[in-house]
Length: 498
Image 1 (cartoon, rainbow, N blue to C red):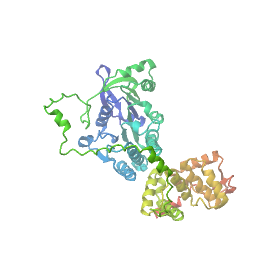
Image 2 (cartoon, rainbow, N blue to C red; image 1 turned 135 degrees about the vertical axis):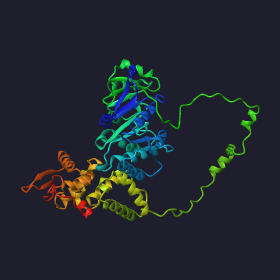
Image 3 (cartoon, rainbow, N blue to C red; image 1 turned 60 degrees about the vertical axis):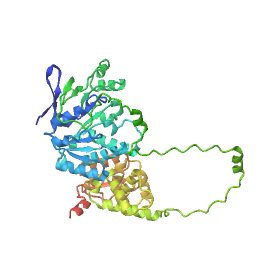
Image 4 (cartoon, helix red, strand yellow; image 1 turned 180 degrees about the vertical axis):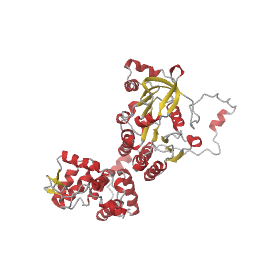
């Protein structure tokens, strides 16, 4: 079904149409300096498309919550745990409800973590709920920065990964990204490059004008025009908008943001007692503590006397305030929590970030002593736990398998260790369904691609016996699995269903 959204006016008074169905397949990038009308453009797009498609707005300033009264959007306050936001996002896709994720009032790092958890929940939704969703991210440079800032590397990686999934892999899951940024130079290139439609507004810096001209296929000499664009005027290009650069003027909107541009208002007449008003504190005014005076300088004679005094005897060592951590007990607690997580049959299909939050909560419940595992260490321990063998056990062959797994990406280590364990234990070769579950997928074809990838790396050799059963041989480990049928069902999933 073809639905054209009226975005405003094109030259000669013609309406500026946006093909909504094409937008869902090709994504949109909006750029403009502060005050150029980006939020007004996004509001026009959301209002015009609200009757036709589900919408999700990542709103860092709380400007779009006013859509709720007129168009029925549900406002989700982001002041929640990341696990809770992930579950809410999954239910949003299940029930096809348009929402506004209000990030107002959170610090920048908290906003990045909350947005990453929410986008991750929408991205990881079950295939049965992959309905089309228009995902609008305002101030996208906050969630996909081109360079690291004052936030932690972990928060930046989580947020950037969620934005990359939205723009690069979201189309097959029904997620159509619409991102708006003040400066293209601040936005990660791998996120911006996935958009096929562009709306470029007013900008002043040479680097941003040059990148905007390149994206629109314009001559570098024409880039100066972006400095002269008025508020609400944009240059459009893309399969959903126009095949050639087209200047458009965004039309009016029916709702308004809670904040507005500053307006000049006359100053009030100065009262006669103006000096008394600013010098006399009011009864409700908080008392500011008075700064202490600087200490007087100590005479040189006294300093020499202090230096010549003998050192006092060392004080007896006090007992530690907190009990000493028992490493054996701590490791046992961590292993118990990991087993509890893996006992859930759906754990294989959840992202590492979601499982990490579940791990932290369970660790507090079981009062695991010491500092919690970092995310990188958790991923490693989880991969080993999925294989079913401890890092410190299994003999020399298993130690070599662990060393080989460290050469692989984090998301592939668990699958490799699973097939390596089957080889060292002389177990039948795992089926495609079992390997797909270990990777967090329902696709047997993806499991076969993983084995092909391992074979290309020289880690294993895949062969088939005369009965059509698969055998995996590991040259470096000098062992191989017993024959196993690749189309056999996943025993774990079948036991869970029973």
